[in-house]
Image 1 (cartoon, rainbow over the protein chains, first blue to last red):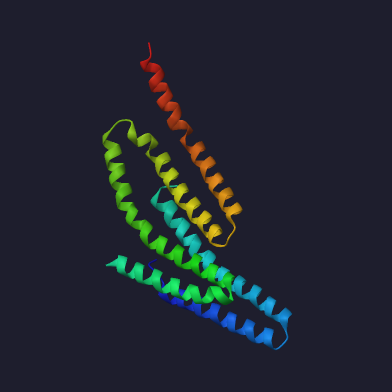
Image 2 (image 1 turned 90 degrees about the vertical axis):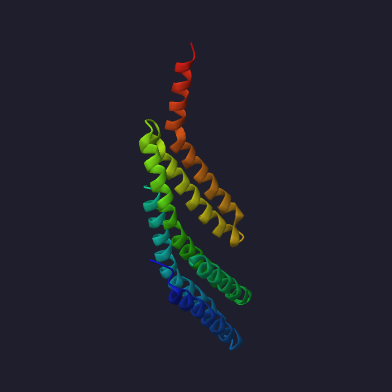
Length: 66
Length: 128
């Protein structure tokens, strides 16, 4: 696949949303929810990231005939 | 021209990451992994042409084609190890990064043993 710009934008926006929600939860006193939210956000993004890292490593292996 | 797309994407991602790193450094790290992997995955297929040229040159000689596979594997291992180590270093985990690099070096050494043995054989044959 080529460069998928929409996925990058989605992950960036998701990151900003997590940051804003974290700030809101912290300010309203729910600190534990804030930490859980950050953890969940990282897990959700990791699905996409691991898929693309897999794509990268498959491409490298195909090019160099692993 | 693809290099302009890649350069623009990298600059835009850097600016976004600068903002994101202040508030949520872990989201900035995963975003940088994603952008880096995508750019890398877009650039690596271009090497396929170089690899094909190398293979055709090696096929013309007698001895090159045997070890071209090992050489290509070594280059691939180097790329992947460097990618992983640099990501760890970006997250201030230079201990893990050096372990990844060490693993890459050990694997490359293992892959290069047959080539070294062939060279030793040729040298020993040359000696009286």
